[in-house]
Length: 168
Image 1 (cartoon, rainbow, N blue to C red):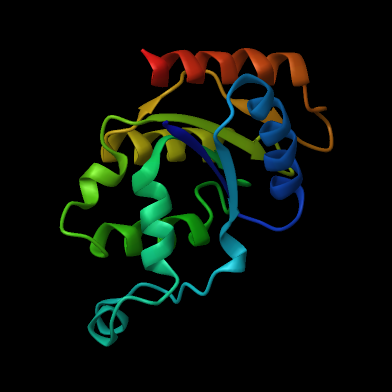
Image 2: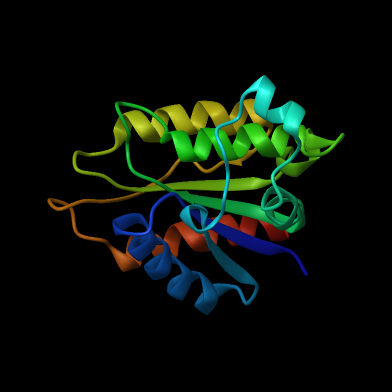
């Protein structure tokens, strides 16, 4: 069975958002998993660090990404773009396998954010990144903040759309 991988960039608000999404996703689809990227040791990707070798936490993460048919990224806007922890994770995944594009290409994606502002720069930047990697990104997003309450009905609608896409 295919699965949905929910990726949280933080241990705070975006993890809480990921948990709310996970609860709804499990009502619509049985095989859903959350990972909190902060729980893994992922050094900054540099050519010199790459020469040292792939960090031990990257291989199991790459396998989880490979086995997923859909991704839901939950991250805050960071300096008007993608948080470094997510960019760094993608960089390591891209060098951890000979077929790195297969980790992302043709899979479905949904982008969510809990940001201090409206998170629009993150949503745009992440969409560009995911589409470049070959992910089919849903046009609708999930946005929550101190000013915008999480909308479970809207989330359910987007999850249903994601499930239809991976079951199609």
